[in-house]
Length: 355
Ligand code: TXA
Ligand code: MG
Image (cartoon, rainbow, N blue to C red; front, side):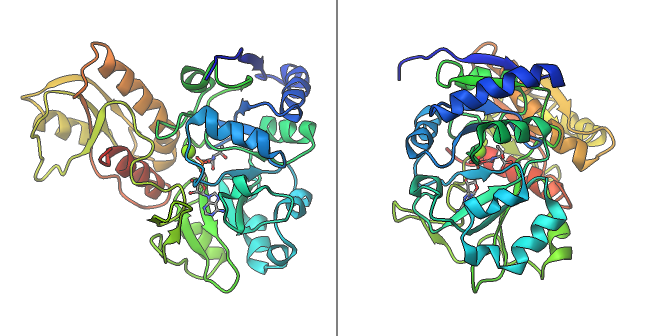
């Protein structure tokens, strides 16, 4: 892929946004790729109705085409451009949108005809969300079409929660980066499927805790529901939910502190849910070279931990890479799966999966 010039468009204030939004929108309408902030992670956007532009997303990320994209809208009224009339009349769609939009919830439901096959990865359903981020919505409004956007990282690598993370992975591969502050929530949206005749199912834990969704809908079906066949024929729990995802360059190992497996470890970085667990991790790794360490939240607050998760993984990974050791490891412990903790635990498990 030839390098292209990536424009940096600052949108850190209302006045910067006023000039960044029209420029970003012009690039998007011309079929370009623009990374932009959302409350969960930065997204890599293209016009959702332009199949060629959408194809560029897959090329820029190196993403397999069996992994569908999330379509972003700025207002509830645009939902009719994304979902089929059957989906629009499903009361569960309205109930979830009322309760959680704008916000970190993606609803998967039957797609409108205008949504290209590639966005849906050949499925008849599409994922849609209304982000709780003024800059993201201003950009979608200025463009005038829904925006398809996966997280703005290379396939299989850590999700970006800052413009700097995006630039490090995608500079030279995309047309522009809209720069605002760090993503407030820090883990991707919760994905819930609402398919006709099926119970609602949690496809990916994320920014809205599953417990909150179950307060609005009947209990959710299990994450590993009937496998969805990917176009390659392989069965996956949900398209795109490959076991190894969100991976830093270093290996990640989740230690059981009561029976720690320290085999094959030498240089490590410690990532602890809280201060107390960091002290226990330090004691049990006393014989190893501990390069650096970090605490997700001093007070063990999962909301704060989620907002720092990818940032700290990026940081520990960079510190471990200083002398390029290929077998360096980030050590962490199981994260309690309550509230946002389920999304944190899920991302850590995927980061630690065999690659
Ligand atoms: O918070 C987020 O959701 C971020 C920001 C940018 O909005 N986006 C994001 O996109 O995380 P991405 O591409 O990294 O994750 C999209 C995932 C897919 O891998 C798949 O698991 C699920 O959403 N998904 C999307 N459309 C689907 C569909 N039609 N059926 C099943 N799952 C779908
Ligand atoms: Mg992603």
